[in-house]
Amino acid sequence: MANSQHYAPPGPLGFGGAPLGNMFERVSDADAIATLEAAWDAGIRYFDTAPEYGPGISEHRFGQFLRNKPRDEYVLSTKVGRLLRADATKGGQHGPFVAGLPFRVDYDYTADGVRRSIEDSLQRMGIASIDIAYIHDCAEDAHGDRWLEVFDTAMKGAAVALTQLREEGVIRGWGLGVNRVEPCVMCLDRADPDVFLLAGRYSLLNQPALDEFFPRCAERGVHVVVGGPYNSGLIAGGRNFEYQEAPPDKVAARDRLAAIAKRHNVDLRAAALQFCAAHPVVASVIPGTKNPQRVHENAALMKQPIPVEFWQELKRERVLPENAPTPAG
Image (cartoon, rainbow, N blue to C red; front, top):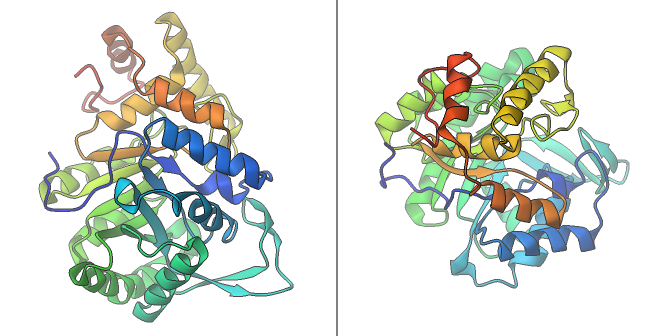
């Protein structure tokens, strides 16, 4: 079980900010604020964003909304490792983000870069403090063959700076925000993180975090925030997996899950959220959305009763590993 020596955000449900950075499609400012308002009304008090989301748009929108809320009533995390630099030639498409702001995105995992990144984020949001800083994407999917070199720079620079900022009381906790398990395990060997944001690596479709990473976190009292519980929307009935069109084998796996859920009259989205939240090291699950109605749906889905027989069939059919904790035990 995770203990209280390391800081963790509140759960079981938080709000992931990537969609409000115009991920895959443009979102109006009015819809973004309405979505954040819906999250607040649903009782959500943990909000996660990043400079890359937009770039900058998500942080702007989070700040516009949260700066009008009492600061001691919510937990806010953002990310470091990328600096935004004004560049009139940029804008439009940035990775999966469309209609972006005119900024160039430069990687910087040094100690100085981290301090500047946090200060820049505070300026963009118009808020005086963040609670958690995640070192963003120091992993193979972002850096290819150079990722070990980049990770080493992050451990010698960003991790040291964030540990100092935590000791100074500037932030309450730090960790990695990544889509891969390997750097998280390595970070536990080299530093003293509080919480990891791991996207897409613990879900009904994908559980590589279960074997070594989660047990190591439990030993250290380190927490995990699960991002991407719907695997970029595939589990929720969408077509994307890992931020792109889902391959046929993943669609087939989703359809198998959906068939079992249908037999037990279970909403697969409810199962996805509750499965992620059931592991003892998981502090919060942060599905992202750009729709106020979907926020309220997620809050209701997290509480929806699911029969124990559903979880038993998933394990009996080897859809889930036997050692995966489920809400029914």
